Image (cartoon, rainbow, N blue to C red; front, side, top):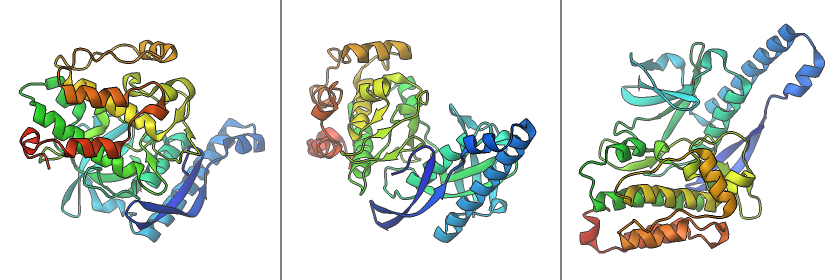
Length: 339
């Protein structure tokens, strides 16, 4: 699979079916430190290795036809949207309005940041689904560093949607749940399966027509039941949506995404909106095996699905194929033209 410290390039055989084609070795900073104790020498060596890594990314991108000349990308004037570690700009590429994602520290782009984007490319470029934000390509320029070219999503995030909460109908909530569950059912039935690993309202975007799409695959991993993936310490923001096994042991399973989805459903169907506590609060509850109290959720069908998603034991949680099938089976008048 693909994890921090190594980037495996994947070749798509057919939709949802990936296989390793070529390995790109990553930076080995310990070796570089042994070679020279001089700070300036190490800095010079690190800069050279970053350029070497970029050359390898460019090589694979050209081979697979997703590497773009930086001159083709015209960034719009204005402030970018800021994430925890990333910046997202609006841009024009070949007469198409797109989003351009890079890291905040691009001017001094470190190898960890570069590997994070490489990891994201390794997963994202293999995925094609109506409810997944489309990866269009990548490029590099001196000012912004490595940049991901992504489908433009002008409708904002689910996080912003939840904060407004004016005039939201139950049918709209179910439409959002259906879009998310379809995307995750697809990811989890890829070969090998893909765990998103960071499913939360800030990473769910709306297009111009109100459809939801999943974004941000920086923590995503190719996983199988026999080989759960370990996640680096300290990478999570927003413990509310993180499954107990991820919070406590940094073990990523497909079922971890199911838990995150259940907590998103809690926010959608809880009338007063998301209740925010500290990350320590959720970690303490996870250690005690305590689940979210959902007694205040009035929608019986929503409560039933949520209860099957947020179980402390991941092996007892439902899966996204069942979730999407359940929502699809709702009477048509209840869905208000969701399909």
